[in-house]
Amino acid sequence: MDLPHPVHSPPAHQNAGRSAATSPAAAAPLFAALDSGHAPASSRSGVAAQWLLVARLIRPHGRHGALVADILTDFPERFHERSRLFLVPPERVGTSVREIRLENFWFLRSRIVLKLQGIDSINDAESLRGFGVAVAAAERVPLDDGSVYVSDLVGCTVFDLNRAGAVVGEIVDVERGSSSTDLLVVHLPGARKGQSEALIPFVREYLVRIELAERRVEMRLPEGLLEINAPMTDEEKHRGGRA
Image (cartoon, rainbow, N blue to C red; front, side):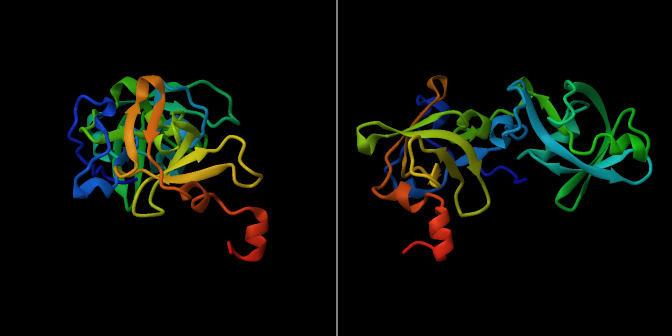
C-alpha cells in the first residue's frame, strides 16, 4: 500500500523503540508498518500468525496465468528478493495454505501482477481469485526504531494512564490513509450500543510505552477523546450528525 516512512524514537531501551517525547516533535505521528506483509489479525482474516499477507489476488491478467493483485505490504520492493510464497485460501474455500514459487512480477499502477509457477492459463488463474499471497512471519523485514508492525499492535490492550491506568479496550485494527495519522481502532468493552469502537491517533503525544510481550499499550489520552472519536450511533446518523 504505502512505502515506509518510519519515525525514529530515541529511547532504545523501551520496548518496540517507542515512547512519549517531550520535544516539539512530540505530536508527530508514529509509524505502524504493514508487515513484510499485511497483518492477518489486522485484516481480520483469521489467518494463523505464522503467515503475513503481502498481496491479495484479484483477477487474471492476460492468457498465461498471471494475476493482478492488491499490494498489502509496505515493502513491495521485497518481491525482488522472494521466490517462495504461500497461497492462503479465502475462508469459503476451506483448504490449507500451500507453498508456491514466484516466476515473475511487475507493477501495474498501484497494483502488482504476479506470475506463479504452475499457473499457466486463465482457468488456473480464476481458481485463485480472492486468495491471499503470504510469506512466513519469520521472514518479515526488520524495522527501524520508532516503527512497529500492525500485527504486533492488533490484540494489544490500551491502558489510559490519565485515568489511573484504566483499560480502554483492545486494538482490533489500524486505520491508515483516512487522516494525517494512523488511527488505532479500539474495541470499547461495555460501550453504549452503536459505539463499540473508538479511533485513537497513533501519535507520540499520547503514547507512553508499548510492551509487546505483555500485549500492552500505555497512553495518556486527552479528556473527551474517546467520545469525540467514537463512531456515530444509528440515532446520530439519522439526525445527520452529532449536536
